[in-house]
Image 1 (cartoon, rainbow, N blue to C red):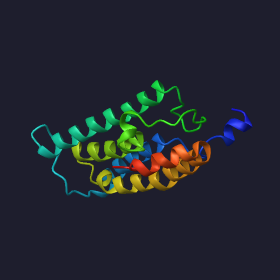
Image 2 (tube, rainbow, N blue to C red):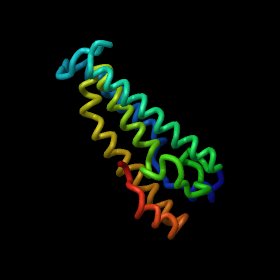
Image 3 (tube, one colour):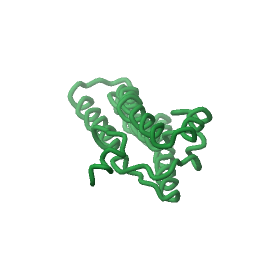
Image 4 (cartoon, rainbow, N blue to C red):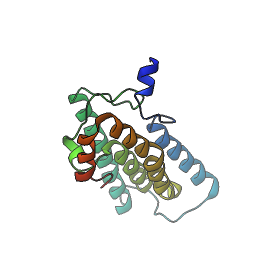
Amino acid sequence: MSTSEASDTPGLITRPPYFLLAALVLAALLDWGTGLSFLAAPGLGSLQSWIGLAVTGAAIALAISGVRTFKRANTNVDPFQPALKLVTAGPYRFTRNPMYLGMVLFLLGTSLAFALEWGLLLTPVLWLAYDRLVVAREEAYLSRKFGAPYTEFLGRTRRWL
């Protein structure tokens, strides 16, 4: 990556999926190590597990939809590459961050499905990490890059839900 390409990015500290991976690993370790237990045991007969699986499926579909919309628009999905176009179609009509929202919902859903109490507790922490460490930087970058069209997009589309 050239110096000009490196400066034409939001300047994130790491790739966003790593936040989700870290939250999942931490949740599993804390669940194993602390014995915290307030969720029903996982199982196909559990309403909690079915809700968790449904949320997980919706999360995956939302994130994939965001990726596909970027690819159809011929812009980079990787935030370590320059944004080539402002994407406002597909799930971006309803949320400015379908991929990150999908990752937060994935943690919530898998936590319910597999009774990861710490995953449930870490879900708002993951959301906050995305909001402050990723989305805020991306919004500042996209405002500089796309100007008024991005400002209009901010005004008509919610950041999360």
